[in-house]
Length: 318
Image (cartoon, rainbow, N blue to C red; front, side, top):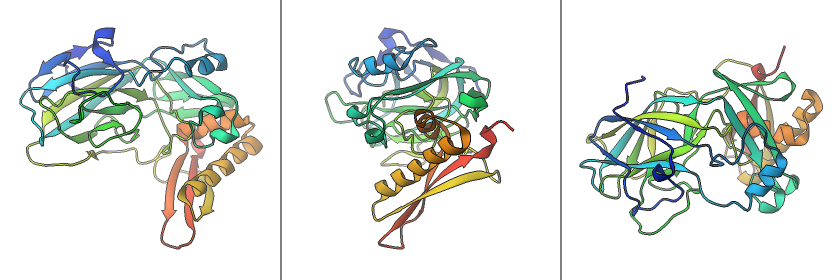
């Protein structure tokens, strides 16, 4: 689906912002249907590099700031109550990525209370594969984690929580070939994108996927044939990290609380990776965030619900 861009937006300081705010001036105004190539910084805003260590992750706690987003781009004629269609045409990584989690005291991540120290893996991204420890190779399916339009509510808003107009959705199925539909709340829509991931498990349990600088090429058009009041999307997949019909190992969590069930399933997967794949606890936690898919198996047999964690077996060396 790749197309020649009509415009290119580089990731210079003038074209990057770290809040959602309808007062941000557009860095470019385009006609509906224009193809725009966005250069996107990684989620750390370039703070990490190939030589970074866990100490650098600890220092990031005090750096602050939101996700660096490239944009906004205004679409001519877009008005409140319109629908902006974002056709994702191509995503290209730059050969490096980062998975990390913060010290447990920061309370970021599903199991933050069980990991008091920070963790980091610097990924070598080679084509469609990311290299982990012990010969493990994770398939890459790049997607932008944070993409949306400006909210109608005035003021500066954090890029961390997802919102009605998009933002930090972290939907790993928004790969090349997908279309995201967003409700427009301000004139011009003011679309921005960033926080790109080379891969991510459904759940992003340690708080990061494979965070990577990336180029995103997208067509921005007005969808006059539909009205949406929240993000909706069409995608060709992948619907799971391992693909249909391939072997997977699963662990379950069973509880009367869905979050507790989720924690149980991930704890059991971490134990499995430590005991059977030779990973440290920190490595297992990072790998779960990058590749393990969480699924709600059932929510009807009260008082308990079942959540499972699925680990594709093809990532391991034979």
